[in-house]
Structure formats: structure tokens, C-alpha cells
Image 1 (cartoon, rainbow, N blue to C red):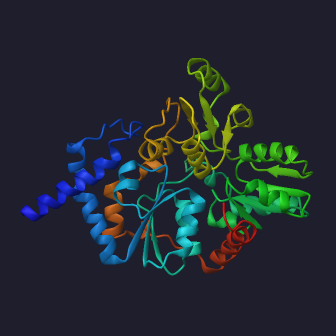
Image 2: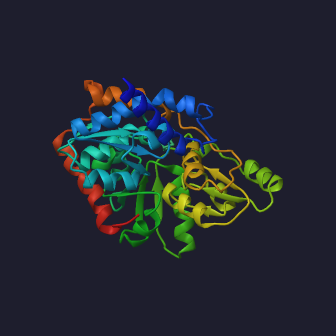
Image 3: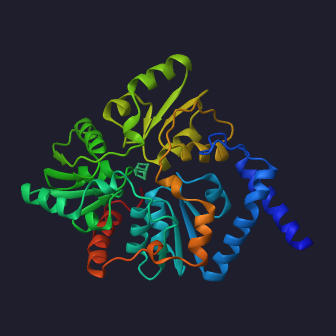
Amino acid sequence: MRHEALAIEKEAERLLGKLMHVDCDPRGRSWNLGSCRDIAPITLEINRLKKEKDAVVLAHSYVEPEIIYGVADFMGDSFHLSVKARESRAKVIIFAGVVFMAETAKILSPGATVVVPDRGSGCSLADSITGEDVRKLRALHPDATVVCYINSTAEVKAESDVCVTSGNVYGIVAALPASRIIFVPDRLMAENLRVELRRRGVDKQVVSSDGTCIVHDEFTLGQVEAAREQFPGLRVVAHPECPAEIAAAADFVGSTGAMMRYVKETTAPYFLMLTECGLVGRLEVEAPEKRFIGGCRLCPYMKLNSLDKVLDALRAPRDDQIVTLDETLRGRAGRCIERMFELAPTD
Ligand code: SF4
């Protein structure tokens, strides 16, 4: 009993060492030893079960900080986590993120049992288009190369020629021989892609579908201007899922991984992060000397993940939590992702 109490106290102190820095908490919690003691038995049990079941937890940077710093073996953006899924030899992958990411893990690590904590963790972008929609676009533009953003379902990847991330999209599209590109599912990233191709002097027509990310499409120019006025010296950091006028007004635009690197390497009095709040939480832990002025937004799908659901998924996953894919579809989607790794081995 005493041994158990000591283990909980030690775990609470470990958690507090990380979580005490999180100001931008999705539930407005302030982390202290008491709140860390409350979750310590759950993180201890998850970490014990991971060993027993030969499991790893992959956590996207947008999920809650107690998952990232309590139980994740790997944390990061879609690209980084897909690399980890591809390298993984674990029997079980618990994917704390959204369903399309878990599908990507299953595509790249077909021998593993891939489990999502909450099957409702969809994505406004990924769910905006079907494989049938891609086939129709291809029929309209038979000469085009179909490029899908990694934020897409396995079905859409299976219908596409090459997958891209927010970090490698410009380089991969610029290098493709086709002069016409069908880009799915993000209309706003397609707009940013057109701007960047023009800037690089690359002549290509980009046809896009109409999806948007409900987090990134809500930022406004007024918000950026008001923040710059109030905080002189402010650096505005945006994700390429934001509208083109926001990208143009930002000091830096890049994938979540690139945004983190930029903030860590840049000296400025304040940062405005035009992305999901989870990334701000990570930066508060990993670069506690930096100052963030708020303004980020929450993704309701990512926030469906919780420690309790991760524990359930690990203990006895329900059928609806286990990701299954038709083998032919998995093979076709896998070729689309492998093409990305061939063209851009690093993000
Ligand atoms: S942040 Fe946007 S792109 Fe990412 S999961 Fe949420 S809705 Fe989808």
C-alpha cells in the first residue's frame, strides 16, 4: 500500500514537472500537485499496460497535455507520427489523434492492432470528400496528377497519386511533371499552394475540392492587426490550413513541426499562434521562456481523446475502436503515402 502511494506521489511529481508550464489548457485547468495526483494512477496504469501488451501511444500535438506528457511514446504532427507508425514494431498502436491519422498508422503498420480512443474523432477536412468525389474530379481532369493532403481518409488516399503534408506540399507539387494538379481536400491550403507556386515561378494549374479545417479557417485579418497593435514586436505564426490573407500577414507559415522550431529559434517578446491550442501548450512546456498572447483555437475532434478513453482502449478495445481496412484499399493508399516518402524522405 505504502509502495503504491509512493509510486503515485513520484508520478504526480513527474507530471507536474511538465504540466505546471501549461497555461493554455483546453479545460482551463491550472496544474498543481493535487490535480497531478488525481491523474497519476491512470497514467501509471496506462504505462504499465503498454509494457504488458507491447503497445505504444502516438499522440498528436493537439490532444490534451496530460496525454502528451503522461503516456505518449511519440508526439508530433501527422508526418512525424506516420514515420513512427511505419517504424513501429509494437503489437498495438493506440492513436490519440483523429481517425484518419489512425488509418494512416494502420496503412503503414498493417501487422499492428491500431486503436482509436474515440471513434467520433473525425475531421472537418478529411470528412469533406469521398473516394467517389476524387474519381469524379479525375474524370473531369484526366491529365491531372491527384495530390492528397495527409489529412484525408484511407479511401481518398487510395484514389490519389501522391500524399503530401503541410511541410512538404510545396516541394513535392513543384517537382511533379504534370502541369495540372488536383489537390484535395483543403481549399485553403490549395490557395496557399497557388501563391507559393507563383512565388517560385512554377507554372501549374491547381484544381481543388472544397474542404476546410474548422480550426484554421476561422482566423481573421482583424485579429492579426489588433494583436500587432496591442503587442509591438509580436511574431505571428500561422499554419498553411489558414486562409491565404492570413498566411500573407504572418511572419512565418509552416507545419506544426516547423512552427515549433521557428518559435524555439526566434527571439521576440510575444507570439500569436494561429493554430490549435494544443501546440501552444506544448510550446509552453518545451520553451517556457516564450510568451504567447492567446488567440489559438480548439479542435473539438482532437479533444474527444482523454486519459480514461486511452486506458479503455488499451485494456479491452471495443470493435468500434479498432481500425480495420480492406486489404486492397490499404495497399493502394499505402502506395500513395510511400510515393511521398520517396519524393520527400524528410518533412
Ligand atoms: S485541427 Fe482541423 S485538420 Fe486537424 S483534426 Fe481538427 S478539424 Fe481536422
